Length: 323
Image (tube, rainbow, N blue to C red; front, side, top):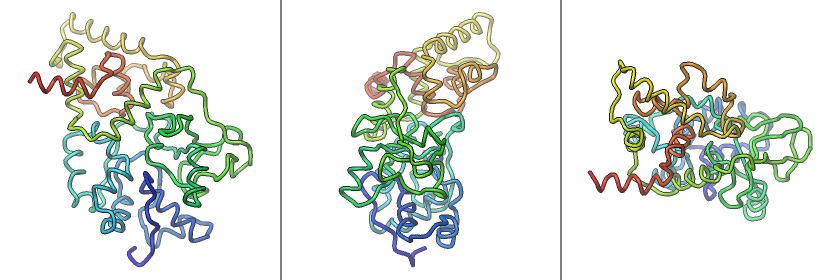
């Protein structure tokens, strides 16, 4: 891999985007055939996984130029996901040796999240990037699944074509955002979706961006602790009494009723009825708070919002001052 010349990373560019641009520079048609000799782990190149072997391959190329911290903090989604990791995963991803070893760290139940597997872009950023750099690229911030608008222009992000159904889920067909607002498959205009039906999407955008941009000593156990305090139980036994079962049922019902129907259209792949079926965990407030279920960050953020724990930063700092 070191005998090839990789492009410099652009500001806020996702690490995998550098590979997409390298392929574009080669002027060839087959992404897999072109990249495989130099980058063996290029299957399923989407932003859904926090860390995977291809990241290690790219990191080893750029590490001498940028250093580990800059690459991690400015060119991956780890700054956002680190708050939602298990203690073991968080420890692993703090070790340079692990990062370079080719390990894999995934998000729990990420398959339920609509935007997790799509590459997304903002048309205004595309034009600005073309003017400044002569090419388009994938912005890391645009790939956070709980963010639906561009962090610069506040326009809804685009992941594909509504007319022909083409979606950017890998780099095999098209590797970079289109340079105009036309679909590269059918040439129809690429239009963003409307988010007007869910006003709380502004809060989700803002808190997700704040978590991404502001390094804070915040862990998933801090979030669970805040929720347990609000729900009224420090712990719940495995065998619940009748009164506790009623309380648990009420907790979940209150959470479900707090969610606008548009939440499921915008953020999840399944309907409200499917998600809230018996035994589901992706939006089960009790199994997350008390049973350590691994669920996507969007689910945790919705739970915090429902419990009126909106100001996460202030609440975490206050709880530490009291302890």
